[in-house]
Length: 181
Image (cartoon, rainbow, N blue to C red; front, side):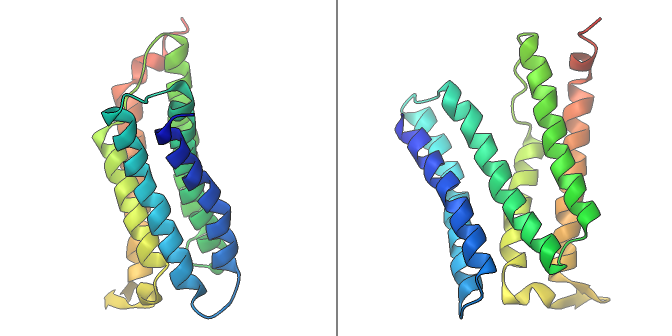
Protein backbone atom coordinates (compact mmCIF):
# COMPACT_ATOMS: atom_id res chain seq x y z
CA UNK A 1 0.00 0.00 0.00
CA UNK A 2 1.33 3.42 -0.96
CA UNK A 3 1.96 6.22 1.52
CA UNK A 4 -0.87 8.21 -0.07
CA UNK A 5 -3.29 5.30 0.44
CA UNK A 6 -2.13 4.88 4.04
CA UNK A 7 -2.96 8.54 4.67
CA UNK A 8 -6.40 7.98 3.14
CA UNK A 9 -6.91 4.94 5.36
CA UNK A 10 -6.09 7.08 8.38
CA UNK A 11 -8.94 9.38 7.28
CA UNK A 12 -11.26 6.37 6.97
CA UNK A 13 -10.27 5.24 10.49
CA UNK A 14 -10.97 8.73 11.84
CA UNK A 15 -14.60 8.67 10.64
CA UNK A 16 -15.97 6.28 13.29
CA UNK A 17 -13.84 8.04 15.92
CA UNK A 18 -15.40 11.36 14.89
CA UNK A 19 -18.86 9.79 14.98
CA UNK A 20 -18.41 8.30 18.47
CA UNK A 21 -16.82 11.44 19.94
CA UNK A 22 -19.49 13.79 18.58
CA UNK A 23 -22.26 11.59 20.00
CA UNK A 24 -20.52 10.93 23.32
CA UNK A 25 -21.61 13.73 25.62
CA UNK A 26 -18.62 14.72 27.75
CA UNK A 27 -17.16 18.18 28.43
CA UNK A 28 -15.40 19.41 25.33
CA UNK A 29 -16.58 16.58 23.08
CA UNK A 30 -17.64 18.97 20.30
CA UNK A 31 -14.20 20.63 20.22
CA UNK A 32 -12.48 17.22 20.08
CA UNK A 33 -14.87 16.11 17.30
CA UNK A 34 -14.23 19.36 15.40
CA UNK A 35 -10.46 18.80 15.69
CA UNK A 36 -10.83 15.24 14.40
CA UNK A 37 -12.97 16.47 11.50
CA UNK A 38 -10.43 19.18 10.61
CA UNK A 39 -7.49 16.75 10.70
CA UNK A 40 -9.43 14.21 8.64
CA UNK A 41 -10.31 16.92 6.11
CA UNK A 42 -6.69 18.04 5.86
CA UNK A 43 -5.59 14.48 5.09
CA UNK A 44 -7.64 14.70 1.90
CA UNK A 45 -5.28 17.34 0.52
CA UNK A 46 -2.21 15.65 1.93
CA UNK A 47 -2.91 12.25 0.37
CA UNK A 48 -3.57 13.86 -3.02
CA UNK A 49 -0.36 15.87 -2.80
CA UNK A 50 1.69 12.80 -1.82
CA UNK A 51 0.09 10.70 -4.57
CA UNK A 52 0.91 13.26 -7.28
CA UNK A 53 4.36 14.28 -6.02
CA UNK A 54 5.63 10.73 -5.52
CA UNK A 55 3.71 9.15 -8.40
CA UNK A 56 1.64 7.01 -6.04
CA UNK A 57 -1.63 7.22 -7.96
CA UNK A 58 -3.24 3.80 -7.74
CA UNK A 59 -6.56 2.16 -8.55
CA UNK A 60 -7.10 1.59 -4.81
CA UNK A 61 -6.42 5.28 -4.14
CA UNK A 62 -8.82 6.34 -6.88
CA UNK A 63 -11.48 4.20 -5.21
CA UNK A 64 -10.88 4.85 -1.51
CA UNK A 65 -10.11 8.60 -1.57
CA UNK A 66 -13.49 9.82 -2.87
CA UNK A 67 -15.26 7.19 -0.77
CA UNK A 68 -13.50 8.46 2.36
CA UNK A 69 -14.54 12.03 1.52
CA UNK A 70 -18.17 11.04 1.05
CA UNK A 71 -18.22 8.99 4.27
CA UNK A 72 -16.71 11.82 6.31
CA UNK A 73 -19.20 14.41 5.05
CA UNK A 74 -22.12 11.98 5.31
CA UNK A 75 -21.23 11.16 8.93
CA UNK A 76 -21.42 14.85 9.83
CA UNK A 77 -24.65 15.34 7.87
CA UNK A 78 -26.31 12.43 9.67
CA UNK A 79 -25.37 13.96 13.01
CA UNK A 80 -26.83 17.32 11.94
CA UNK A 81 -30.09 15.68 10.88
CA UNK A 82 -30.28 13.83 14.21
CA UNK A 83 -29.61 17.05 16.12
CA UNK A 84 -32.14 19.04 14.07
CA UNK A 85 -29.46 21.27 12.55
CA UNK A 86 -30.23 20.13 9.01
CA UNK A 87 -33.57 19.14 7.50
CA UNK A 88 -33.56 15.60 6.14
CA UNK A 89 -34.55 16.85 2.67
CA UNK A 90 -31.33 18.90 2.52
CA UNK A 91 -29.32 15.86 3.56
CA UNK A 92 -31.08 13.84 0.87
CA UNK A 93 -30.18 16.38 -1.83
CA UNK A 94 -26.52 16.28 -0.80
CA UNK A 95 -26.34 12.48 -0.59
CA UNK A 96 -28.30 12.01 -3.84
CA UNK A 97 -25.85 14.23 -5.71
CA UNK A 98 -22.97 12.08 -4.48
CA UNK A 99 -24.63 8.89 -5.68
CA UNK A 100 -25.65 10.46 -8.99
CA UNK A 101 -22.19 11.82 -9.85
CA UNK A 102 -20.59 8.52 -8.80
CA UNK A 103 -23.05 6.68 -11.03
CA UNK A 104 -22.29 9.03 -13.93
CA UNK A 105 -18.59 8.33 -13.49
CA UNK A 106 -19.19 4.57 -13.45
CA UNK A 107 -21.16 4.75 -16.68
CA UNK A 108 -18.40 6.85 -18.27
CA UNK A 109 -15.73 4.33 -17.23
CA UNK A 110 -17.69 1.58 -18.99
CA UNK A 111 -17.12 3.52 -22.21
CA UNK A 112 -13.48 4.30 -21.55
CA UNK A 113 -14.06 7.88 -20.37
CA UNK A 114 -12.84 9.45 -17.18
CA UNK A 115 -14.79 12.34 -15.70
CA UNK A 116 -12.29 14.44 -13.81
CA UNK A 117 -13.24 16.45 -10.78
CA UNK A 118 -14.76 19.74 -11.91
CA UNK A 119 -13.92 23.04 -10.25
CA UNK A 120 -17.53 23.26 -9.04
CA UNK A 121 -17.07 19.91 -7.29
CA UNK A 122 -13.93 21.15 -5.59
CA UNK A 123 -15.70 24.34 -4.51
CA UNK A 124 -18.62 22.24 -3.24
CA UNK A 125 -16.26 20.07 -1.20
CA UNK A 126 -14.40 23.05 0.28
CA UNK A 127 -17.67 24.85 1.07
CA UNK A 128 -19.12 21.72 2.67
CA UNK A 129 -16.06 21.15 4.85
CA UNK A 130 -16.01 24.78 5.97
CA UNK A 131 -19.77 24.74 6.61
CA UNK A 132 -19.53 21.52 8.62
CA UNK A 133 -16.70 22.99 10.70
CA UNK A 134 -18.82 26.07 11.46
CA UNK A 135 -21.84 23.91 12.26
CA UNK A 136 -19.75 21.99 14.80
CA UNK A 137 -18.85 25.16 16.71
CA UNK A 138 -20.80 26.77 19.55
CA UNK A 139 -21.36 29.77 17.23
CA UNK A 140 -23.60 27.79 14.85
CA UNK A 141 -26.72 29.31 16.44
CA UNK A 142 -25.43 32.89 16.17
CA UNK A 143 -27.91 35.10 14.34
CA UNK A 144 -26.32 36.97 11.44
CA UNK A 145 -29.11 39.03 9.91
CA UNK A 146 -32.89 38.86 9.69
CA UNK A 147 -33.03 35.78 11.91
CA UNK A 148 -30.64 33.79 9.70
CA UNK A 149 -28.19 31.81 11.80
CA UNK A 150 -24.72 30.64 10.86
CA UNK A 151 -26.17 27.12 10.81
CA UNK A 152 -28.94 28.08 8.36
CA UNK A 153 -26.45 29.85 6.11
CA UNK A 154 -24.13 26.83 6.18
CA UNK A 155 -26.94 24.44 5.22
CA UNK A 156 -27.99 26.77 2.39
CA UNK A 157 -24.42 27.02 1.08
CA UNK A 158 -24.02 23.23 1.18
CA UNK A 159 -27.28 22.63 -0.68
CA UNK A 160 -26.70 25.36 -3.28
CA UNK A 161 -23.12 24.32 -4.09
CA UNK A 162 -24.24 20.69 -4.19
CA UNK A 163 -27.02 21.39 -6.69
CA UNK A 164 -24.79 23.68 -8.77
CA UNK A 165 -21.96 21.15 -9.03
CA UNK A 166 -24.34 18.24 -9.66
CA UNK A 167 -26.09 20.08 -12.49
CA UNK A 168 -22.71 21.07 -13.97
CA UNK A 169 -21.44 17.47 -13.95
CA UNK A 170 -24.53 16.25 -15.79
CA UNK A 171 -24.71 19.15 -18.27
CA UNK A 172 -21.02 18.81 -19.19
CA UNK A 173 -21.21 15.02 -19.45
CA UNK A 174 -24.73 14.46 -20.76
CA UNK A 175 -23.46 12.52 -23.78
CA UNK A 176 -22.25 9.80 -21.38
CA UNK A 177 -25.89 8.99 -20.65
CA UNK A 178 -26.57 8.55 -24.37
CA UNK A 179 -23.71 6.12 -25.07
CA UNK A 180 -25.97 3.09 -24.61
CA UNK A 181 -27.67 3.59 -27.98
